[in-house]
Length: 306
Image (cartoon, rainbow, N blue to C red):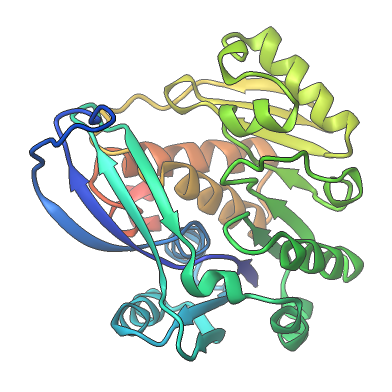
């Protein structure tokens, strides 16, 4: 089983010709509401890309609004166990306002809503679920205290812990937390911030390698830096390698990183090697960026096998 602990949002997506300047009103294109949130996106990616024998469950919080009803239905439609997805009375579900420009790049603003209510008590209540899992996946769109508690519990139970440190933290993550994470998967901006560097400085393999070396010194066992069209730089216990990106034409990069993580974790859960899991995640991400939206863009396993 794969357990995802994290956020669930409704994405409010607007297509724009370009990103607006401060103070500018810009005429946009099509508007959509699409199920999202980094936690839910990764859960959906795991569910769609896993073998039939692998079950996927989520620990999260929703608001008691119409978005919450729709978001829970979306999880169930993908066969995700929502028995530990709590509805918080009097709270709105999380939302993300997303602008997508003509080149497929996006800009996102979050309102956490019920995601901020996810507490250590919710994690403890789901202990039996975590005990049944092989891999536990987390992000940073829920309270850090809850993330730390969940990582500690999963590590003590001998689970493979995967952390996607997104959104990028404003403060360095504690070394004792990183030491309990088997796979740290940031993008290049998040990797730079975690290493105390500027994002612009990570413009070549040597700079990325130096940032990753610092993260590993801080406690991370294995670090996979997703680089968009430049691929994935993986520093693993077996060595470091730069995996070239799969060729594709990007329409919308929303949830591409989540799709990669879902594919990588799904492949690990069925016993594939790290290199095979990375390549599988890359193929899934390449398909996702050729489509619009978050969960609407995440492919199914049979599409990759075809």
